[in-house]
Image 1: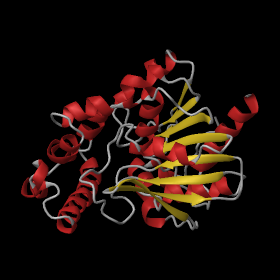
Image 2 (image 1 turned 120 degrees about the horizontal axis):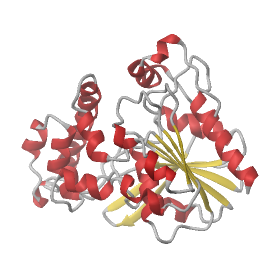
Image 3 (image 1 turned 90 degrees about the vertical axis):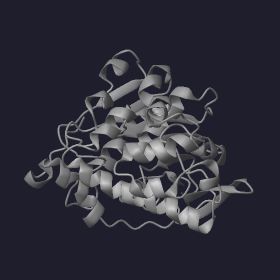
Image 4 (image 1 turned 135 degrees about the vertical axis):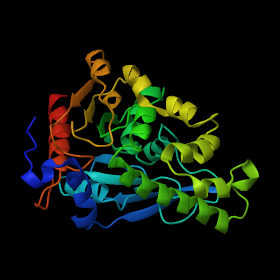
Amino acid sequence: MKEYKPSFLFRNAHVNTCFPTFFRKVEIEYRRQRVLLRKDDFLDFDWVEKGNSKIIVLCHGLEGSSQSHYIKAFSRYFSERSWDVLALNYRSCSKEPNPSPFFYVAGKGDEIATALKLTSEYQEVVLIGFSLGANKVLDYLGKEEKIPKNVKMGVAVSPPCDLKESSLLFSKGWNRIYEQYFLKQLKRKVIEKEKKYPNILKEIGISIEKVQKATSLVEFDHLVTSQLAGCSDAYDYYEKNSSLFHLRKIHHPTLILTALDDPMMSEHCYPREEVKNNVWLHLETPQYGGHISYASFEKEYWLEKFVFETVNQFQNRK
């Protein structure tokens, strides 16, 4: 692996993690497609199409979207190198509240399967996920029994493979800053949905008042996420949606990339034993990189370059 060698500034994991969110500007032009799943449910997908025979499907992280800096960076980098792009937006992540009471889950869900129906005409599909989206990719590859034949490879960047341990880590030390950032967005979306579609959540037993008082992501998952996912509580939800327990069943070449200094990853999120026991999995753990960052003052980051080169190496070995 070409080593990521950051400047002194980016050897601080929190600086590295936060820098691109505030300072990285990437421009990309998408074509939006809305897929109606039911009369009260939809998913929005964003395309970059140049008539190529191969495509990457990008899955964003918690409270991200196709507009997240890392999604746009990968869209630009790959589209400039003979790949088409399909970027997902989970429910409530495309700037419009979904009329369904549901949001999205950290596990397999239905977004990837829907995206793969849209990409059925491509010769090669590579799934690339980031953070929560990386867990979704791994969970899909481990659980799904009928994966389309044109899916050739998976890439998971900073996957919280053990959702329970990762969620608990959010409430410790400096990570409380990230937790409150995400919690504020999640609460706002619940309130917006209830305002636009009165009683849609109250009717299924979710207390908006309790949600507003939640002080941690685990508490939010107790009150909202687990209930919408049909789970008894947050811990039941974490167990059912953690990709860690399904990595052994993956039968596609899959890269897992997580920096050792990632502030949001517990030790359980580095699946060393699972990788040893599954020849399809490959784990890379750079010393630095923060959380889905690998920041730089250059236009292009180490992250998209490394993933692109890894995907190319796989193609050349076929």
